[in-house]
Image (cartoon, rainbow, N blue to C red; front, side):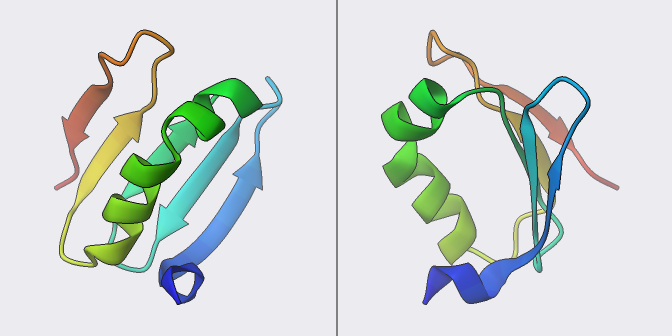
Length: 69
């Protein structure tokens, strides 16, 4: 169900993944471990289609948030 909220998926030159939501958010996933460790968080972001934020998932859990205007 939440995959229907994904609008685009890009693999960058650095082999990370930029996941764009239909709600206007971008989730930057650097590697598989970060994806696995943050799966529930990613699911939550995909479930909320009203967010407009860029999130870079960090390995230590201190994610970087930037408001998208």
